[in-house]
Length: 136
Image 1 (cartoon, rainbow, N blue to C red):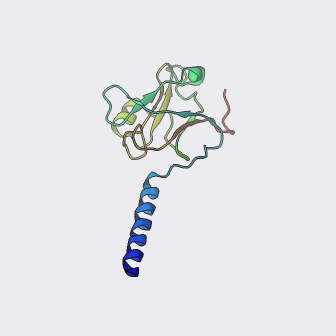
Image 2: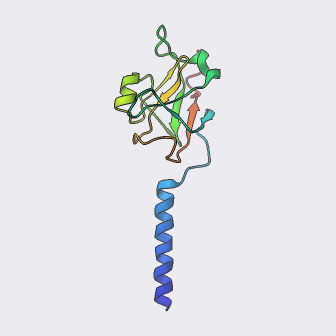
Image 3: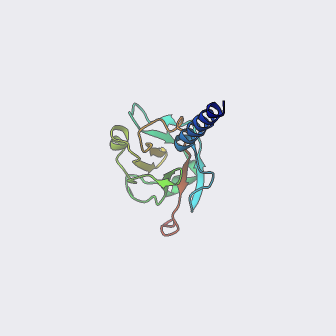
């Protein structure tokens, strides 16, 4: 009977460890975080991997045709920065893998690091303004 309890305890431990390995989300926010991007995120047009979230209060600092590298914001997935920043929207849509853009009137167009739907992964997404890259 004792061995059955030991096997059961070990099984519960390994199941919990596996669950937390893939589902645990740190509760802290990245340094310099401006705001958390909250799901659900909208699919960016007919994209394979790109999602979009509007942040009108940051439009004044976004990229546009005249200044395509103006935005200093970085999108984070949990506590890891995504990138490359200022990616072409077609590359975000077709390649994904964490590419993102902060585009005027569109907001943040981004993909998760594994190209899964960021609305359903349980990961947290943040907009961060690094201290070494303030607003211009």
